[in-house]
Image (cartoon, rainbow, N blue to C red; front, side, top):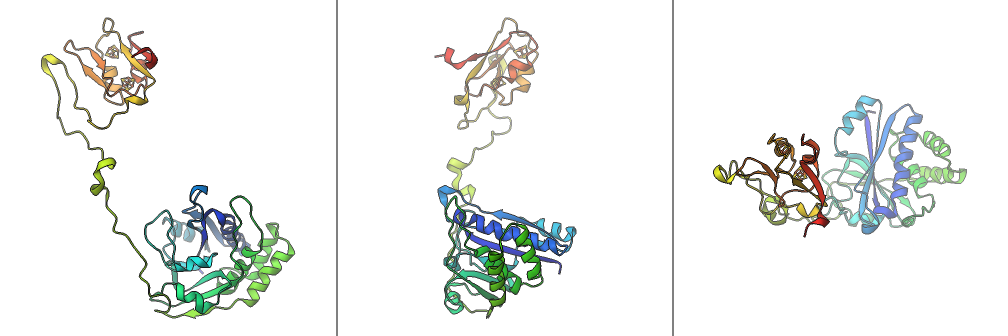
Length: 331
Ligand code: SF4
Ligand code: SF4
């Protein structure tokens, strides 16, 4: 068999549990046949942006090496089966993770299968689905689209019907009996296994030919790169060796004009020049290069740069030479 990859495309948080149940069941069923698999999610949304298309994947392999090879990628670049649990997404999907419209069948392999939960018939759905250069199968799991809401999972057997259909269209994955066994072991009752069986027995696949389907060109955007959006995104590095004030005036490094974080400070170091032994440790260890060298060769923290971390106080070998003092004590 080598590797079989399945993606479940779902409406964000409304269908997350449904998608998770499907991919988990795929892996459990595969294990019944001594295979190895994993399930994982991508692009999941949160309540603030609910309903955004997201994906979960199940990858099944004959052995660990094959699985590891597949998982070296961020996600599969093509899948044997795409499962779409909301037929309105047949028109294409745009998640928060990319800009532009992705055809629902973009990852579906040549001669792979797209399973859609829908009350529509195949010809009607094909009008919405973007055409491909290669043939694929379209199998419809007849039911109303399942939306379980944000926090409550409504067990309307959609996952069972999808899994039954999957066993029919992708027999190289596992047998229906293995799936039924895995479902029962996950606590699904007999009625649910029966729903899967009915879907398995009744599943049909409509061949979609190359070039058949919507000819719409999915919309895309020409996005600006980070170099075109310098203001607000880019903090330029300091020039090499630039801007030192030295000689009789001491030594002060060039500092960034725009990157300041001193307002985060709750404490500031106060240096006792009377006891400083000029060991340079504070100057060397300060993570923000805050220390200026005074004309007398002492080290003084520059308050335009200091974030108040206290490292200088910790490294100073002279007791009470560097003291962290609350910002509230300064006007
Ligand atoms: S408190 Fe931290 S940031 Fe400020 S001078 Fe000391 S070491 Fe540098
Ligand atoms: S670590 Fe203390 S003694 Fe050493 S240079 Fe800094 S302030 Fe002076």
